[in-house]
Length: 255
Image (cartoon, rainbow, N blue to C red; front, side, top):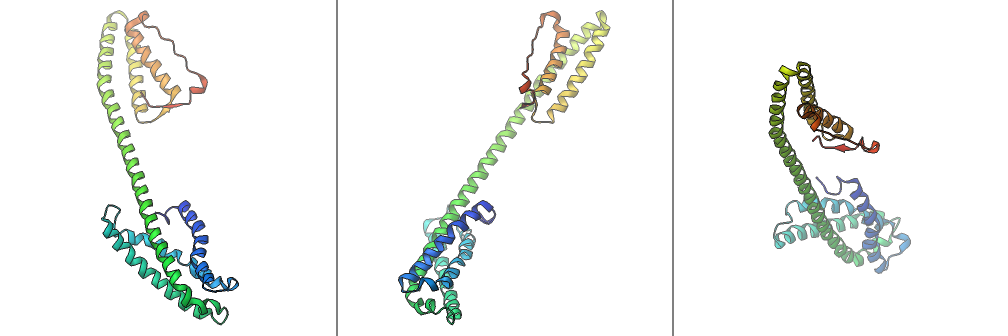
């Protein structure tokens, strides 16, 4: 994907920078060669059209990656720079000849200013290739960072699921033992504990498929868990939960 055309923000920056830079690289040599500034509009149009091969230079850079040798990069960049700028100079010659009946100045001084324009265009093409390499490296670095972040999140999720798979069975075994102990002495309590246990695991499955969840939902889940534990420990378990109203909607992992 083109690092500039695929990003509207980068494209706006390129256009904003190239409009004055293109005028400097072409109109200035034309003026130094004796051309009249009043008749420079054909030169300005011709210069701005060089933005097309500059943007197309990215396709040249694709043939030689950043990790290639310096000689390979230079061979891949310099040759297309010279050829592309030469074609641009040839198009300019035809363009100035076509508009010579209206504006003769650019055609008249073309032989004097086109070497300077050729040099400026070649340097601009090489500089644009350097920009393409820098943008591609930045994009690759960002993609690598995103992949590392996604991998870290996936690893943490897997670790959390592993902890759940270890903790839940022990909790279930303890609850079943408590229910078994309550059946002879408190059948209603045992029945109530079975219902609370079923509701707790139902909420656990629902919360596990959502990430993150509101703090008030997590708090309600914790209270249900403590109700089950209170049936086991009785008055020996005392808990006081205080949740600030402005924190109720805060998102947290389902613990």
